[in-house]
Image 1 (cartoon, rainbow, N blue to C red):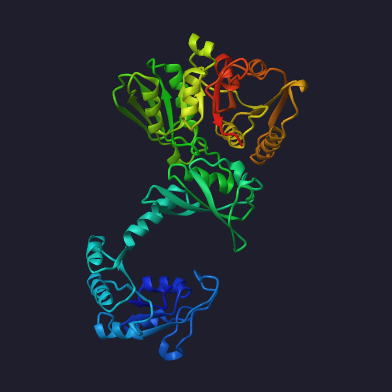
Image 2 (image 1 turned 120 degrees about the horizontal axis):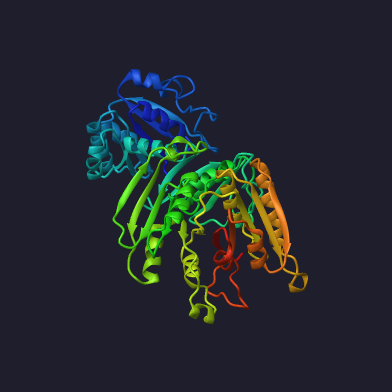
Length: 509
């Protein structure tokens, strides 16, 4: 902890700093311009030490931390003078920090050099010209580049559509965002463990001025300020979803729709993938196939997407060569490309796969890629989004994806609940809970979810209930098995259904 802080320079930077620093330690502002000190000393900001030494700013001013408010004083003097800085430093046993905040880099660097020689514990220089940052470091100061900070704030405000205040962590590999949860958010009332966060975590919640350290059982409330840390590629979608429930598919998983075409181009499948890319928050469509010549097509204004903001209508279609010959090499490439949605043909299992009870290539893809996998039928457009709730495989994140797709594609949502016959076991309370949440959330968004309750073999019932123009959304557990005793319901439906099937591998609770 610092015992005192010295700021040299009474410009706008010092004015902004004072509102925050008075909650850290007593602060002295040194300035050689009477006019600058007078401007800084207007009512409600700071008082000159000659008028009322030891007085501070009102605790209600913007930026004041909750707790003790330390005094702020000013001194009319030359901050580049060694004598002035030595006197401001005071007792050598105290920890004193200094901020060089004049309008000239040359002066700030000299102040920082003298401060280091005089034993200031922490020396910070406010950089005016970014090209001089190295000179600050050479004299032992920590440079703070105003232009870079401004650029980061503006860039993140634009990228997050003004929803949050963000900062980077881990050398830019992660970001922290703060989200204000509005009353209509679907996250309200949901335990954090049920959000099944992938690539992000809730780090803290501020509720009515109090800090809540979250656990899996913590429930988000309206007007909470939720601090989220995670990968920059997924946080914009997470922030929007937590704040007000904007449809964000596939952003929680990634921004790219990747079409995996190991047997070459297929125009029907590609057209279906293009429709999904254009209609959702995806930014890029990658067609990955053998001997592809790298190529990009930019679409500045995708058609028929009036519900998207103007900047979200820009899409990129790209061709990427498929690597290697083995499935493992190709799966590794897909993982590196980080799909938000993977589109792949539903290939029949080989004879060996069936004899050994294995799920085949579809199971390998679903297990390896954390994003949902769409097994298309080349449908030019969907008529319904159908979400299958199968006993023991209910998942709230997957339900949110189905609701998102219904909203983005402007389609009715149908929920099919398939229960096993009574002699196979007891009802699944988790399926009941997710079904209730789907009804609540869909009503919140102004859509009505039709529910069909079926009993019997889940594979047979889903295949019979699905229409050729449906988009069927179904979950599965991570497994390489697909046998008589351990069937992979989702992949069996994907292979046999007449409609396109979106499969998401969900983790066991």
